[in-house]
Image 1 (tube, rainbow, N blue to C red):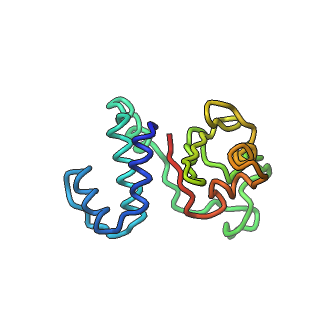
Image 2: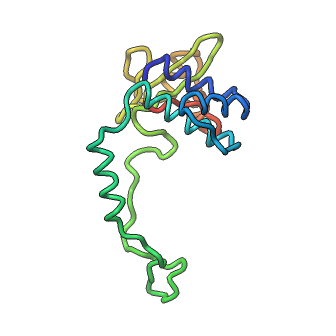
Length: 168
């Protein structure tokens, strides 16, 4: 995602519900019935990104519709050994996560304002990119920026629910 698009998306964070409803009308061309601030931010952010970088191709839309039509809909919880199905195990093996679940998906742009500077780090499959260089951890980026030791997740606000991120 370009920096201009990211700035536009981040600007939604400061808007009131009234301003978000006006922005929704502007980007979608129709009014919304919603007054839910988080929903409006997400929906508008998606639309801004779609306009900036293009949406799905018609072929992709048709394929998504095919997959949705062919999907099995489970109406009942799977039955386990206990018979009731509630709380019963459905398998014998566990999935082992391959990456830290606290980190956003690769391609996400993490944004932090620090001492009058805007710090932007991109999440990669194996590491992070900041200022054109690769880093193994967010803590290494925080140390580079501040000159002191920081928890990288805390520095970029990933431990808090309101961490600002731009999906790429």
